Length: 93
Image (cartoon, rainbow, N blue to C red; front, top):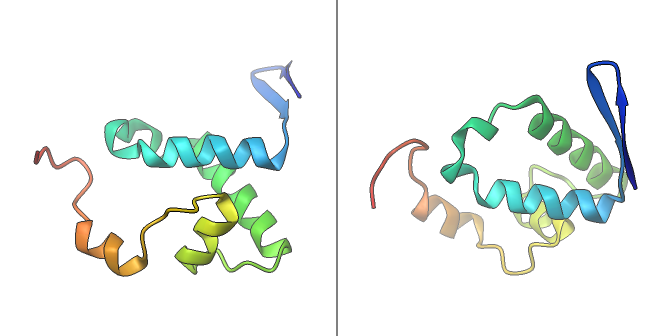
């Protein structure tokens, strides 16, 4: 595993399992750091992982299957997510 500076960009070599961990942690804290939401890094990471999931026969649009593939063993069901959903940026307690 390594990081290599290539001009203005950084190239990295990491295992898919490590990238899944990074994605899970970032995604779990998006409401605390909304500035991450549209970063090129997060979008590319998500797309890369979705492509790997598809390669493994997992449909990333099936949230339960996606969560299991990512390693979120205790992830809520889609019904539970919808019930708890709130608008990002809302400052409700």
